[in-house]
Structures are given as structure tokens and as C-alpha cells.
Length: 124
Image (cartoon, rainbow, N blue to C red; front, side):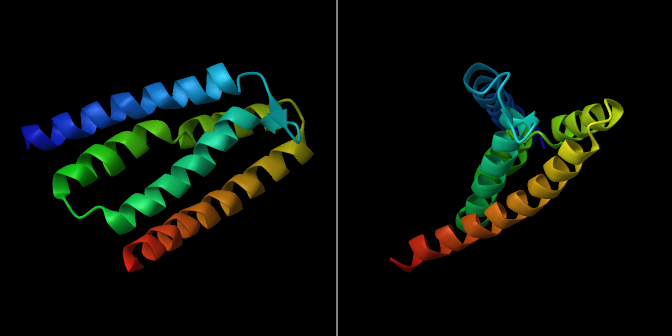
């Protein structure tokens, strides 16, 4: 149990650092169709990555480190939710609706795409 917790914790710390670097340093303050580009980009990229990892990672330790840990720390659904509520509270209902719909559709599509890409890789 300790090994699993350490793997998830280390992966989560790394994922959080990468999320922060990408969403704040690279995309901080930028918007896409009126909503936060950093959070959206991180959620889409994380969905793609977790889809690929789910299809290619067989080791339990790697799953703890990479899927539960890194992807759990990297993806920002809680931040997505807070951003959506912020848009709703400011009365920006159009941007909020587009942000919510695109986030859900694109992230699900990217997770499926990641699984497909990983499946292609395993055929070669």
C-alpha cells in the first residue's frame, strides 16, 4: 500500500507541476472563444494522454504513477468547474455554455483518440 501511495503522490506532484507550467506560464491569461485557454488545453491534452496510457500501460506500478498520479495531477477538472462557475456568475452565459460543451465533447473525443493512437502503435 505504501508503494502505491508513493507512486500516486510522485506522479501527482509531477502532473501538477506540468499542468501549472503549461496553463499558467505558456497559456496564462489567454482566452479561446472567451474562456480560459490554459485549462481547456490541459484538460484536452490530459484526456488524450490518459486514453493512450489506459491502452498501453500493463504494469500496476506504472498505472499508479502515470494514470492515477500524473494524469490525476495534470488534468484540471476541478479548475474547469471553477472557471465555468466564474463565467456563469459574471453573466457570460454564452461563453460558459460553449466552454462546458466543448470541454466535455473534446476531452471525451481526445480520450478515444488516445486509445485509438495507442491501438495503432501496438499493431506495429
